[in-house]
Length: 226
Ligand code: ADP
Ligand code: ADP
Image (cartoon, rainbow, N blue to C red):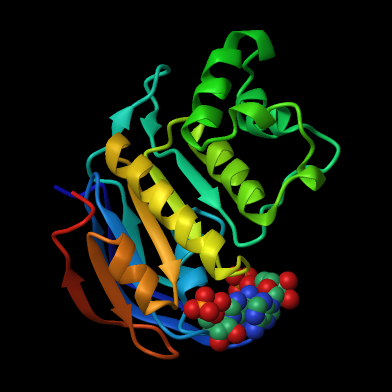
């Protein structure tokens, strides 16, 4: 079964930089897939194309197993966690997590329970009314994850989310989020250049060669992500 299928995806930017060449990749439901490769090999470019923020020069990206949302449209919803938490500084933790629901037209009082539920999942119940500047880097990252998960996306995209955090915070976050994602059978595509993180977190690792990025090998891991 495939949730997402990339076939022969290449990307040449307008300045003629060839960033990706002939990438074939299948994403299966419920897996924690890591894209591992050196800086500049095209990992972010690939993630942006999956998110629809950029288009392949050649090749295709398909969602073969579309499920449908309440309006009968194919559900291709994505959550995106960037390296920089990109929280709105003048809004509370609660309202930052509310934001994607608000943009979807939901009223605050109708989604209060859902927001408190995801805040509990990332361990931030007590900080719902705090502002981003009052939180540590690791806590801000938890808010970003909560915001990306609150709409129940079919795939969660994470682009080197922990790169700016210190070692201890990163290890703790890795452990907590791994447990959470595994429990929810969330499909995750995770980008990193850390071999440690990829081995620790993934159910499958796609190794990309240096620029221009190609898939050079795939490694399946049975544990710890079920
Ligand atoms: P596209 O080919 O997809 O239209 P562009 O070449 O127009 O993309 O570039 C999109 C944006 O990325 C521009 O704002 C550009 O300044 C920026 N950009 C250009 N070169 C690089 C680079 N080497 N790394 C990251 N961003 C870049
Ligand atoms: P990674 O995420 O693996 O570090 P990127 O996807 O950011 O790699 O970049 C892949 C290559 O494409 C790099 O050589 C980068 O400079 C180039 N690149 C990225 N974005 C653009 C852009 N908008 N315009 C031109 N070149 C870009």
